[in-house]
Length: 514
Image (cartoon, rainbow, N blue to C red; front, side, top):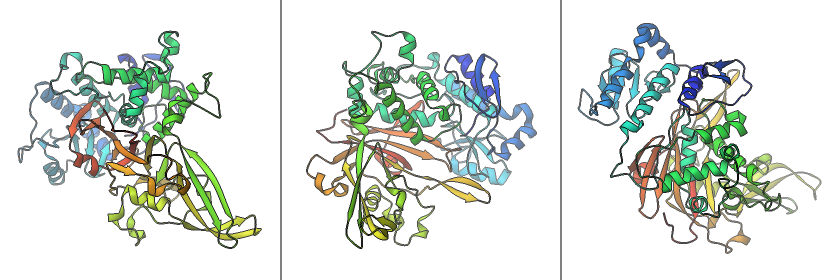
């Protein structure tokens, strides 16, 4: 979903009192009408859908009438069904004629009547059948956001008898699904939940001013945890405006209302937490006790053996992530410095790697499997030789996050295009890391983990896609889909069929509780 026309986006949000964009340098800037001190971005995204522009020219102001029609139906609590088959699931409203169809008949209607644009009723996104993906328009985005806010206004919210404690939606502040999905995974990590809800956890309420409190990432996360786990059990979503502002302030490359990468947001969150807590008196560079170092940080061991003299070169790589790829390729020289590897564009380029072997365990096996390394300079032989390189997990973290790199830059004429690999990758509910550990560390600790959160991505690219997070209540063995403010219980089958992008596991130190 892409880059918003920031003039309209920022002014609408500042008028609601939700969030203001921090100053930053951009190519073309202007001041929001309601926020004279706020510098915002004004250029539209270069991947604008031509069909939306055609619709605007055809209907002028009336091109948003279908949103008005949809809002009227939702206000009346009308059950929206397909006019062809009567199904009320995955329905879409045509932007040209405002007729409602199921997903199958909507595609048929688009082809028959040349009406390529339709609104997904569930997520309120505009889908183009010519482009084959979710599309963005600043006017449609304002109408979509208005419907969401009206649905979540106090007059429309009432306590739900089916609401579950510990489950809460997060309001989308304008292309912030990437942030909401990461926050949901954070909130439902059992070890983090226990840490933030403990009175021993760091917070500033009792000794600092409101200004310091609002700029403390730990205090804002603690508010989120208490709202989700100790708040009133209702359908009212949490508004993460202050967290968004803090991320913008500390990570300028994420500032603005354009869609971002969830993995980059997670790394930014790690950096902010670490930087704000590394200055505490008890923390130093050698022994940091912040929650990132305590729970997420692990270590990989790289072992390179010269094929001529047998000399070993062993080094340790400290990281918060284990990056994986489902492919069979030789590890290059820079792998020791950067263990982040790309996925292939398709499995057809690798006959030894069939689609049935797209699994987390297979990725881990390939990642830790010994492979040939060419042009390795051996200090003992004093020349470049062939060698074997092997990566193993030397120290497994308490919370293991696996990032499956679904986005890859490919060259197209003179420019680079970021393409998504949508292959299904299976992953287990329980994972044993023992086969992938360094031999000397096999018996030191329990290496069995259980899954508690999955961040999935749908869409063909980062710019036009959408993130959702699946979270699990361990004790009840129930899965929930967190799609911004919309939260509902789903089957385990849906979770394990999703296009996983980030997988979150916690070490099973004892029987998991939730």
